[in-house]
Image 1: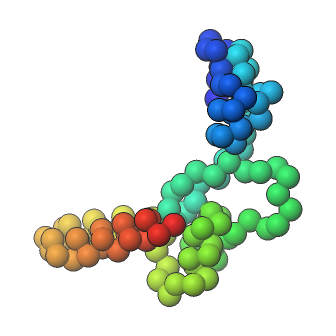
Image 2: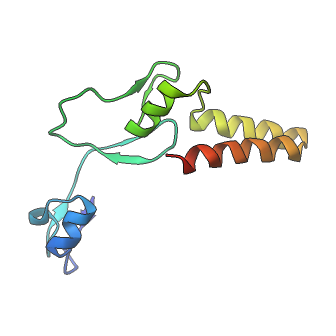
Length: 115
């Protein structure tokens, strides 16, 4: 939700750049849209109500994922939802193995930067 009831709102150019309808994001307006959080990268995606193709779904973790992670899921052998990354990181931290922890972090950072 973007609430402009007490602000000057967005200009038409700003609204278009942000992906909002300019008529709904000006002064005194409230913009609300459905969102979806990707189970793999935790990015929040504003759902496009005009979308006709199916939303990507990961059968391994039983959650919807973003389009970028869907491509990665088809092209990479490693299934790394965010919850698995957190579990791996915590496990390595409790074992006191900084080398394994840094390996997990660098793999995750590489995965996020290539999105």
